Amino acid sequence: MQHADVVTSFLLRRPPGAPEELLILRRSQRVGTYHGRWAGVSGFVEAPPDEQAYVELHEEVHLERGDVQLLRRGEPLTFVDAELVREWTVHPYLFLVVDPTRIQTDWEHTETCWIAPQELGQYETVPMLQEAFQRVYPPETPAQESAATQG
Image (cartoon, rainbow, N blue to C red; front, side):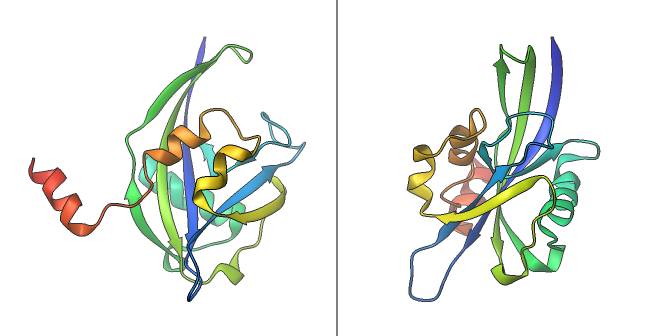
């Protein structure tokens, strides 16, 4: 069985006076797996995962480091896709997009949609997307983060 490490970055926007929203992207027919399914910004790990997350943001949605703020890094999630005979380890990240109008998708996606975070389960997504999202959302407050690192 093949093993693959991937990063998945979830992007939030916080419109003034409105609830925050999560960006999901529909995968094109030109990608290797899960055609037509909704996903976050993801890709194979070819560098340390923290770096790869920024690489994928640049490649897939044309965002630079200054365009996003890292809110949370989640515990990796490993699962097996029996159909593909592949074990995946997903490294999840949550970013706040400073200016969502800067997002421009590449060939890997055919459509984007901003949704309420609690609506993610209503979409046909790549496997375990909701579980990966739950590892980073909601973002911890600074007090929770410092308690977690001290505990």
